[in-house]
Each structure stands twice: as C-alpha cells, then as structure tokens.
Length: 401
Image 1 (tube, rainbow, N blue to C red):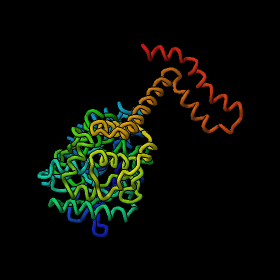
Image 2: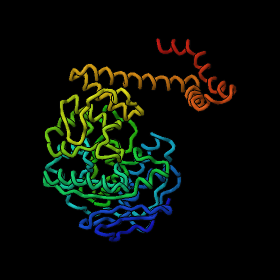
Image 3: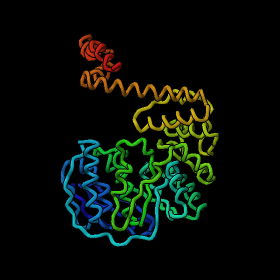
C-alpha cells in the first residue's frame, strides 16, 4: 500500500489535509484557524490496519514519520496480529524525522456521549479543546444531524469555556471496503485526527472497563502507542463502569442536555437501537432523565433486545449489576435472562467447535435457508445436528466433570 501526495489546501472555510492511498483520496477538513501537519504520521495511523490486511509493505512517500511512532508500530502490529492473524505484520517504508514540539493545547474526542462527557468532566481544568468528527459516528452526508449535534456540543463547550473543533473526514469509507471495520481501526482513525492537529495531549475515552478487555480498535493496550514526540495519546476512563459515568454526568446540566449515543443516523437519539435502550435502562435505574431520550415506559423493547457480541454483553452485564444494586427486580430478571442466554450460546458455540469443528452451526445456517429445498438438502443440513446429539453423553460428562 502506497501513501503519496500528502498536502493541504483551502476548501471553503476549511483546511483540507489529504493523501492518495492506492488510488483512494483520504481527506480531513479542519477549521481554517488551525495549523495542520503535512507529515506522514496521521496517514500511517489511518492506513496501518488496512495495509496489514493486504500483507504488503506500507510505503509513505514525500513526508517524514516520527521515529517514536515507528518504534511503537512493531508492538501495535504484534497486538493486532495476535488478536486476529488476518492482520499480518508488514514493513513500513518511510523517512524518519522527529516531530517538533506541537500545539500547547489538550484535546479530547467528544460526540456528546457518556464516555466522552465522563473523560471531559474528569479533566475539565486540563482539556482546552473538544474534537467532534463528522464521518465517524455521524455519516459524512448527514448534514442535518451533524448541525444539530454540533450546536448542542458547542453549547456544552461554551458552558465550560472550551473550544469546539469540528472535523470532517471520509476515513470510514477508506477502512470499510478494505475489510477493516471501524470497531477494529477506530483507535488509529481517531489518532490520525489528533496527529494532524498536533495537540500536546489528546484523550481517547474508553468504552469499557479494565475488567472487560477484549480485542477492540480503541484499547488501553494500544491507544498510547500512537504517540509521537509532539503528541501524547491517553486512553481514559477504563476505571469506571457506565453507570458510574452516568452518575458523574448527572452533576452536569450541559452534559445531560446534549447527551447523544445513537449510531443510527435516524434522529438525535432514535430511542430504539441497542445503544439508546441500554442508556435508557441506565437512566431509568438511576432515577435520571435526559431531554434527548424518551422515558423507559415499557420493558417490552428490553425483552426484544439481542446480545450480539462481547461488546454488547459487557453493557448488559453492567446494567444487570445496576438493576441488582438498585432493587429493580423486574428489570433484573429481564436483563439476567439476556445475560444467561448469551453465556449459554457462547458455551454451545465452544462445544460445537470442539466436538464437530463448527459443523453444527453451519448446519443450522444451511437449514434455515433450505426449509423449502429438497429432502437431500435438508438431510445434509441436519447431519451435523445428528452428530452432535450422538456425542451428547460425552458432552454431558465433560460439563459435569
């Protein structure tokens, strides 16, 4: 993968930083008042994981890269490769030059959510700038929602005498087609923005606690490794559970007034998606309200929720623990059922992988699409289930040991 033609130009009232990456023009737009770096550091952070997916060297032409950052890249690649061998270690070809002292400012990524508000309220005296990115958790073409969110986020920043830095980028459109989902590369993606701004320190708010660590793009093991001689990245907030963060937010009227967590681009908060519902559950259990969320008047939407991933599961466990602590027995029962079902599902997946090599899961997947098919097709789909049932006595003896 080759990065070339790194440079800045004026686009309307913004400064646009861009580069050509194997024919894709990756760009970032910043307010014109900021001096933006044209070094290679930002694009190395943006392109590392997509390049690792190709297994080819990453070549940066015409712009130097920080020796400190390059020294950390080997460790970053070790982590990503151990998490997923599909991310192969690759050589980095670039000129090295120390990053000179940066801007005397401290930034924090901020979108109005629980994590970003919590980090800001912890470090209010230190943080000088809040960085809000269009094209990350608001789609690049959703101008109306971004304008609404930006107005409320600016109101929050103004309430504390801080500066809001609105940024636009097409980085997700670069990552996704290269088999690198945002949840995998968001640490490098966010860091690319911080490296372009060259603030002396930039906070990245944690989504999970130290007890919930699993492979994720932004992680306490990796975020600090994107630092250069000029810019230090700090992963912050992993010491606090989500409901602890909500308790701190409740002390800030500006934070509650603009609270936004939704990724659906269907209104400020849709009130129906998993992220909205888990936040509404936390607010309900703590006896709090936020003007940007409807009240949780019924548990039916909670009963219909699905735990899809370990990421989701961690939040369900947190809310279940909070329901136990606050004595909300009905919500405790509903959330407890989700937690148990996910644990059982994970156990069955592990058993299937060990005993049938995953054939049971593949069989059920085929069966769901073949119910209207021929008898032979259905028989082939059911075969892994038959093999699993045949091995059930062995399975039970292992589980009871």
